[in-house]
Length: 154
Length: 154
DNA sequence: TAATTTGTTCAATCGCGATTAAACAAATCA
DNA sequence: TGATTTGTTTAATCGCGATTGAACAAATTA
Figure 1 (tube, chains in turn blue, red, cyan, brown):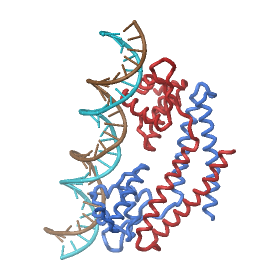
Figure 2 (cartoon, helix red, strand yellow; figure 1 turned 180 degrees about the horizontal axis):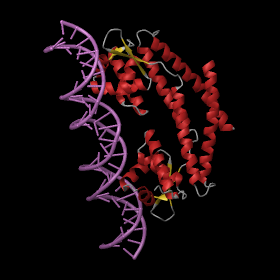
Figure 3 (cartoon, rainbow over the protein chains, first blue to last red; figure 1 turned 45 degrees about the horizontal axis):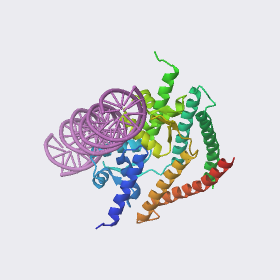
């Protein structure tokens, strides 16, 4: 029988965070930590609460948390007088997913551009196709820039 | 001394294709095959030309090519009377990168939505932040749909 | 028919990042 | 001071997809 306590729902969701972040190049544990900090009703968790809830080693947690803090995704809160560290989700840039998209576009554009450069025949079928894609990407980038502003001020 | 023959430039570029496609979830070999078919001045290559140019086993090539063909990224050309298969890049959907972006948006939106559902306090700092992100994503999706049409007809 | 070419299948291996375990350091407590 | 808590470091291991190798199949040629 499939249990559905709130805790179990949270755990499943945390694993989904792990999968999603895994798919975009993070360590699964990094994704699960972000998931835990997102899902948890308590928004500041101690190192110990994180390792025990996620069942991960202190070593993993230490390394991954340092990285997340360095990237600005997670903030450390050192409570007055205590030696224990608390971690919370950093509420950052809402356009992160858009930034990621633009980076992808730039990568593709760069590859195609270099590819055409190396082509003996710039009128070949593939070369023409690549020109079209570059063109499309450029139009999107222009539009995205204005969209970004529009959404920001709306 | 760093050589820079055209062949070497092509090979480096092919490896970049491998890295890029690797970063978006493909096998590196799949990316290198796409790279070779993109970069090569000859736009139709035989199975044998692919394995020998990329220095990969026939097994890898067979499996990866089958997948690429199934996904519609590569087309098989069977030359009249010959038993040999030729492969060429399929010129498909120019909006592929955009589709990928929308899928990412949907994943994030889904995660955040479920996260809010599970929150005891929907007015918590994180919950409010998540609402904002969902809102931003929704605005983008609307705009992207019209942009897509605009670019398509332009 | 036998020999050759062309590709497929799949068990085994390889590579490499993710993860752990255990020793270690630093701060706090008693 | 010695004992405890809190984390850090890093060498080893683990897991798992990517890749290979070799046997196998199917079509072709001689």
